[in-house]
Length: 218
Image 1 (cartoon, one colour):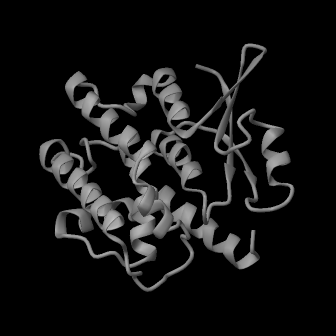
Image 2 (image 1 turned 180 degrees about the vertical axis):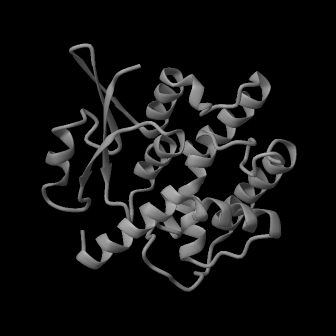
């Protein structure tokens, strides 16, 4: 499928939503151009609206056969890519496994508000572990449970949540960076999984860019 993709993303140091489709596309070998919009600036909203009607990042622009389509929202982007590139196996092939992968991905997409609030994404930083409230602790426990159960049931062959790398791993990758930034203690299986995510070549590329942004205050 000969389409030209442009992914509109926010600052790599802080935009967890942008990391998800970016990482999925990198891991799937789907070529794209990226446009980075600096966040938390007076001009940010206007710049994003030039590309996406939602006024938020990420957004994927698809140019194909003389037409242009914009897809926004990280999950919608990843679902679109999975449909357009079935050979990339962004979802598991087995329908029951795929349903589980979709469920934990949707849970990440819509849930864990206290983790997001109390462990904000800041890849270039390292902070002392904060005093977390009961809600955040419970949500961290749920995330660890998802990882452990998915790895034990599906991930034995490939080392990711559902065997090979899928959209589910892309959606939990920002959480991995949050746990790293704040030194969240993890049990062995979850800790090993987090290390595998951080060691991925695209993740190292993203982290390097995040550090450069932080140094330049982008």
